[in-house]
Image (tube, rainbow, N blue to C red; front, side):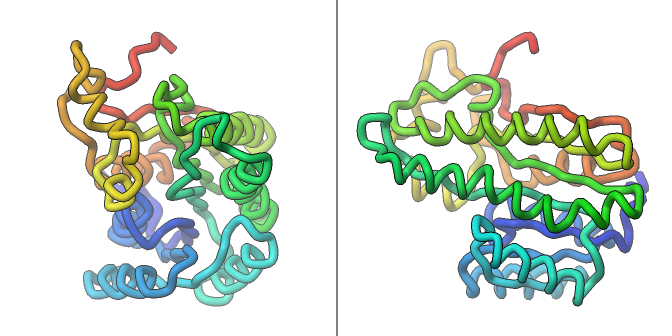
Length: 258
């Protein structure tokens, strides 16, 4: 299947590891020129070198995507290296894990900046060029908590701001549709990434598998490449009539009718 995105330009935030890395790899395999951005230089460099070794067109830049000045620098570097981004992947790798009683007002502010303002800053810098071209893709990498708020006690911040990001995504899909720009959200469940292993303080994934009946119907965690396959399709011309959607990829975790 030809996805017809060869020579498009993609900016992938959180692109150094986990789902972000898998997305960057799949887009590069389709002939997309990919810029990956994250805070830490060494994982970015390693990821870029690995994808380039497989023939991908890729570069990297370190930056804090919740800061508007860093976002301007990242987008300017992308433009100088490859051209204006046609595809933007909003991907936040982690959110502080606290219960409501544990979380301070500053924790709420920081999480809002990390999840929601990150999207605002990147969109302000990239949407005008997409509108001028009449083509663009924004993909929000969210969580199944957008469909069904997690009951695990320590993720009130994720439950709050992931859902806020979905509201922003759907609002943008309304505004951007007439310009040929689609905006969609992917809602992963329990995905087997290094980050997940580091932050599973409450044992949420294991609990989900041990429940009777098991919450994850397929009985296992998902893989980053299973998420990236869906994301890559949503970036393609084949998905040009899909916008404003929140698509769960969770092994059957969520069971709602809508």
